Amino acid sequence: MTDGAWMIELARCGGCRAPFLPTDGPCPRCGSTDTHLYTASAHGTVLAATELVHPAAGWGSPHLLAFVELSGEVRLLAIVDGPLPGVGSVVTVRREGEVYHAHLDGPPPEGRGDGAGEEPRVDGSEGAAAAARASATSALRRRPGATAPETGSRRTPGG
Image 1 (cartoon, rainbow, N blue to C red):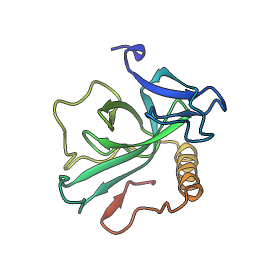
Image 2 (image 1 turned 60 degrees about the vertical axis):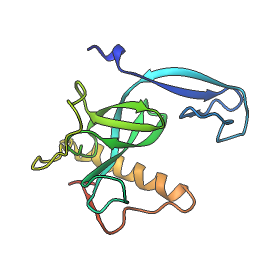
Image 3 (image 1 turned 120 degrees about the horizontal axis):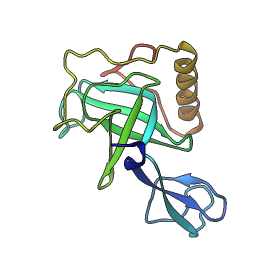
């Protein structure tokens, strides 16, 4: 498929122009109800990724998660289908109901892969990886109550 075929729906506030994930409520930044949907590329850059070895009840193990930035505007947490991507990897994101899924660029995998025995892909550019790590860490610091991954998680190399 061409890049144009991989699109995702996002929202933008008509008041403050902030982009965000679509919700039924007002703009999360200014509270305006003047919001509009638009489509953007579903390709994003992995800022951080982790494997939860002991996830919450009801989730399979290993449970792979990636923090992804779309179009340089919106960041989201997605369940990874397939092998765990490295920091700086390009993934494609899709929405299923209220849950976002990500997979390494290319067609979606047949079913959910568990990535067992596969090495995570890591971008060869240390500068890009370092910038992505700094950005992800900065985003965590700005959010009240946000914390870094705790025991039971494994960070990707370079992450």
